[in-house]
Length: 269
Image (cartoon, rainbow, N blue to C red; front, side, top):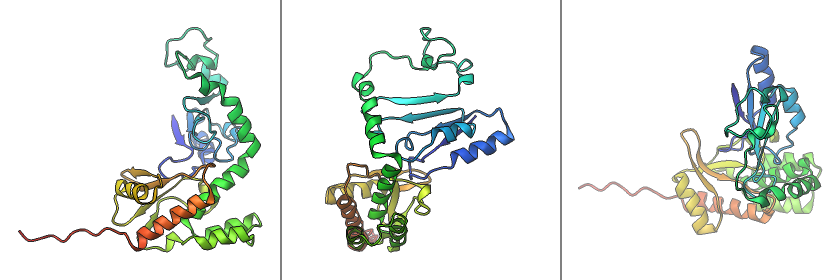
């Protein structure tokens, strides 16, 4: 079995799962490829048919993250030929061995999470996958403030000279030029990520940085203290405005310039 996470939850990095799956199948056609699409579904322009045609055998995802459905629902895609041979987690005999619903044993459940799925899908389609992804990417670029990335993004959509776009660009500081700021997520090309980005700041542990952003600036982030990735994860959503991201950029700028904590000197006993 080969298990791939489509979008890494720690950094927001997008993995080329279709290309990896195709290569894996060349090496061993019988390898079972599973993709975790929890953060990529309804976030990126994810093409289920492309993943299926690449030989991916199973895909699972969350509906509460980027599809905006209430918590408590997800989805499973499984190739028909594999359904019979895989055992369900629950000993439910109400569904046939070849019916994918044998994996969906349900007891008491939040009915609102099921009833709202059609409306959540309708809302997502109304926005459009590409437009939604581009908006989320822009919000990320804005709080990071990298001028080259913002220029490339603006040129790509023909809005670089739009007065509002220019005003937002001028309102942010390029944090990637700050010595104490370390971006832990890929920035360019844009296809390597989406809304999520993780950043570290010299002198702060992830928990200290998350607490400082909340207590001093009223901005919520998630402290990531992982052996490989250490920093705060920032995840703007559709409910966030450009002014929210500019405020985060100004908060990081202030921390970089003025509020870096210093260790107390060691006193001789």
